Amino acid sequence: MDAELFPRDRAEVAPGAVHVPDWLDERLQRELLAACREWARPPAGLRTVRTPGGGTMTARQVCLGRHWYPYGYARTAVDGDGAPVKPLPGRLADLGRQAARDALGEAPSYDIALVNFYDGDARMGMHRDADEQADAPVVSLSLGDTCVFRFGNTGTRGRPWTDVELRSGDLFVFGGPSRFAFHGVPKVLPGTGPAWLGLTGRLNITLRVGGFPASVP
Image (cartoon, rainbow, N blue to C red; front, side, top):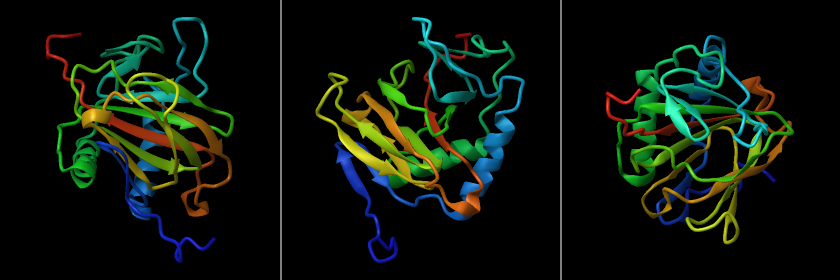
């Protein structure tokens, strides 16, 4: 199928959940990939996340602004090398505000980013982004291989859900009544990323508003 003949359209997947295909141009994708490679370096670099039950997440992660771990946030990589978390670059926070504005007409002040790396076998189970103390929309940016993004409901990990194909450069924002919907990544499609990007696997950058008082460690 020729993507030029059949363009993908912006879609509201659920109230407050919007998919905007091809939101990032080639230049921005290249710049974000280069930045992700720097953020992944130690200290407080890319790590494997371990769950309280003793398992591990197959997608690896690096955090900016605050460090997420199951199920909270800290200023240091408490489940990694213990180093202070890298700051959230102002340019990335600005990109998040622009994304939320374009998708939902809102412009929160983002202060946290979670960067997840998926190789061909990685998955993400159904979960909610509920460890923040604010309910501002979550911004999700995709780089590299295409994935199946499963967007569900706020009450259960089960159906109903909608499967959305997220490709390199796509934007997905969810807020309002969908802010705490369950969502996950059941499948990554290896070898589907643009050759010019030079990325094997998928990177997902999610921006959030923590809402934490300055006094909270």
